Image 1 (cartoon, rainbow, N blue to C red):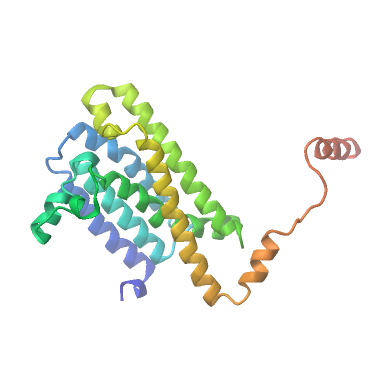
Image 2: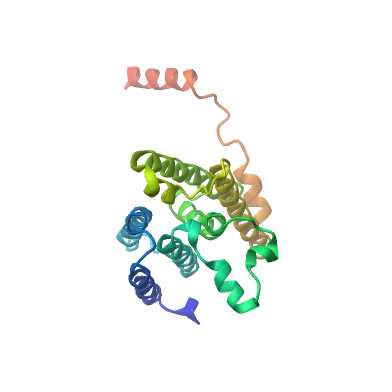
Length: 244
C-alpha cells in the first residue's frame, strides 16, 4: 500500500517519521559531542537528497531503503555504536542475549550497520547511475558495488582523521574500534558484502523479468571503440586543433 502512494506524499511521510526519530534520539544521547559528530554527514546527505529531488526523484523503494539505513544510523549515533544495547533488548524478549546465540564476543551493531550500508544503499546508487549515466548491463551492477566500496573506504578515512584530530574519549567513541585493529577492514568488507548481495538480488530479479537481460549484458561488455587512447588520442586532438 505504501509503495503505491504518490511519490511526494510518500517522501513527505518518510520525512515526518525520520524527523520524529531524529528528535526523540536527540534527547540525552550517550555522548552529545559524538552524537553531533556522527550526524554531520547525515544532515549534509539529507539536505543534498532533498535539494535534488525535484530534478531526480528516486523510486519509492530507493527512498524506503535510504530511510531504513538512516534510522539504523540514528540509533547508533544516540547510544554511540559501541554501546547500542541490542543484547539487553533481545534478552528481555528471548531470555538470552543475542551475542550468546550467535557467538559474538563484542558489540557488533556498527558492523551490522556497515553491512546494511551496502545492502540498503547499493540499489539507490544503481538507480542514480542508470538514470543519470545510463549504465546498462554488467556496469549497472559493478559500479554500485564499486561506489559502495570506495565510499566505505572514504568513511573509514574520515573516521580516522576525526579521531586523530579530536583525540581522547571523543575520538575513540567516534572511531568505535573496541580494541580490534582490523575493525576498519572488517567494516569495509561487510559493506562490500552487503552491496554484493543487493546487486545479486537485483540481477536475479532482472534475469527473471527482463527479456533482453543477456543481450544488454553482452552489449555492455562489447568494445565500442577499437582505437587506442593515451598518446594516440592526444595526437588526434592536436591534429584536430591544427586543422580547426
